[in-house]
Length: 360
Image (cartoon, rainbow, N blue to C red; front, side):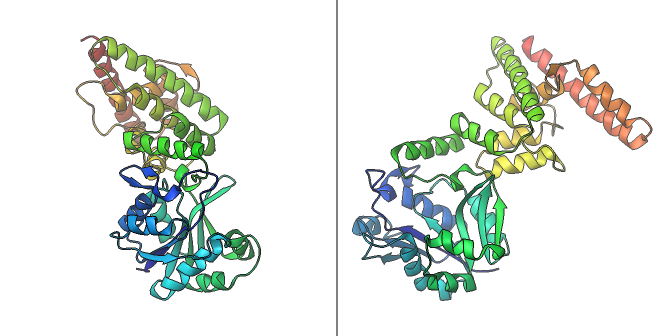
């Protein structure tokens, strides 16, 4: 396995923020501490943190973290690329490849970092639609070229000059593309981290996923109809004393077809959400096509599963009507008909559980 190091650029003045970004709270740590802990959890080693402005404070914060601390004494007049060169120079000979990250992207997930680390290309970066994010990975030869680069626009300019060697990894991780330059952006990152703590996206995090998923309009409208149906079912359960997490139901229903158009779209959708830091929503999406088992009483997974079966396009339908079209498609194939019957029987059993639950 290739040894992967990391360089974190943390020498800046934080002038737009009006507060020292690396030491702002983030989860259980500071912004810098959270980023270092995440990289260490993904086995990045060594990690070099290049400090500058208020360097002594940041170095004290990270003193016991096991990272290599390097001071950029010219932080007031230098650029981020100058800090990266200092970091590269300290660890380049110890690594096969190096991750590059500014300190103010603490919400990038470990799953995103892992995908970048495992991608075999001289240069790797994350992409979502027309946006590029972090981390950026450079192999040893590219690190040498980056250290010698004297052109304009820093790392971005260097990557433009090496575009034939750049491989873009498509991710749905909002944290890869969101930094904390301003107080508003910092608040947004805190909210994103809070959503991940709950296990499903809500608010702006949900909106971002829906906007960047590339979901076709017909799929989006279907998902909205499924969400309305699922919420109605969940509310009816609440009247019978079974209180579900309505935010989770809405989130998972809106995202249940995020992997649509790809093979095994339920599994693919679950992967997208899991890698983005939303395990509860991911598990519901994974089972929206076929349940692992029928629960004894209705829960969020069963409600989203059923709501999807009771909506065709944007129109509410009965199970019989929904499965009739599938039956016609399967006609002529014994194997397909057997699979169809298993799925139809599961849906009828799930509906019976829901009906029994609202009758309590």
